[in-house]
Image 1 (cartoon, rainbow, N blue to C red):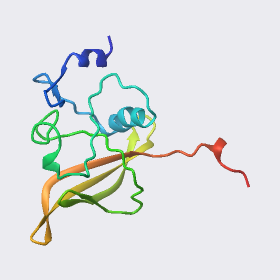
Image 2 (cartoon, rainbow, N blue to C red; image 1 turned 45 degrees about the vertical axis):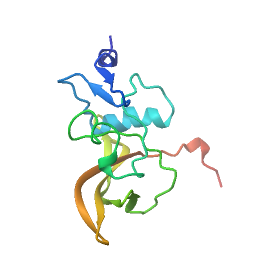
Image 3 (cartoon, rainbow, N blue to C red; image 1 turned 180 degrees about the horizontal axis):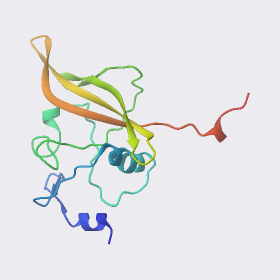
Amino acid sequence: MTSFEMQEGLITYDMDGSVKLLPGYTFDPTDEVLVNFYLKRRVFAQPLPVQIIPDFDVFQIEPWGLPGKDGKIFNKRTCFFYNTMGRDLGGLDMRAAGSGQWKVLEKAKNVLIPQNHEVIGKRNTLIFWEVQAACYKRTKWVMHEFRLVLIANPSKVKKS
């Protein structure tokens, strides 16, 4: 029996569709596991043994409006969502969300495979700033945004 087969029995769902784990169990993956297992499989349309991370456009509303109980899933401090970004952000350091914006605090930290130190992804840390009286006020909401590092395939590179 694999660890995912054992975990599947630990997961139940609320009436609103949010995930509930049995008391005492948490979903607390490392950055490497999030990128190399969950995100990579998701991007390449490979099946996951357990659908534990829901799809949600986190840039449509303020963080306190996220799905689940009071915007929290799995434990009292952490939410996990897949968000398909339909635009190229380039060097953009802000992302509008509801009546505020997420601002990049820490840019592009490498996510490595520990065994060979290969860079497999990047992680940005963002802070939510709420609009109050025509100015922005920093909140305590923090988001870690992960993305895969694209590795060029030499066989597809045009030869000059």
